[in-house]
Each structure stands twice: as structure tokens, then as C-alpha cells.
Length: 119
Image: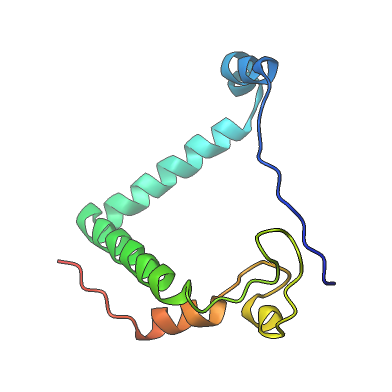
């Protein structure tokens, strides 16, 4: 399907903001689940060692930065910035589906071949 859609910027009204600030946390069990997941993550990080995890996070961020630098020049997006389909067949190969995962092949090449040293 060669259609392009503009993603609208999100916003909330003042009433919604007040509800979220004053009532949403106490009425929503998702915050209990979030706290439990956060505690489990902290325990796992402590078990693995905070220094090692921090090094890996830094390495991941550097690899991501490298992938953005290398791959942003090679990605053929399926839509123009004015939301018109791109006639180039590479635009369909560059993404998993629609405009999801564009540049995935280049990113995987960077991850496989990229060497990022973290001290």
C-alpha cells in the first residue's frame, strides 16, 4: 500500500493533566507493576555489577550513534517529508513494513562490524 500519513503531534488538555497529576497514579495498578519491574531491574543490575552494566549502556549508545551517523545517509524512506510516496523501489526494501524499521540492514551491518571501545 503506497500511502503516507502525517503523524499528529500529541497533546493533553489541562483537565487531563490535572487528572494524571492528582488521581491517575492512585487509581492505576500499572504503577505497582512498574515499581516491581524497576525493583527487579535494579536487583539484576546489582547482581551483574553496576560498572559493567554502565559500560555496556555506554557501548550501546555509542553503537547507536555510529549507526545513525553511518546509516542516515543510506536510508530511502517510503514517503517524502510532504507525505507523498517515494517511487524508488529501494524505499520498500529499506523498511520492514511501511515506514517501520527503515535502515534495518545498514544498522545490523554496523552492529556486526562496528567496534566501539569503552574505557
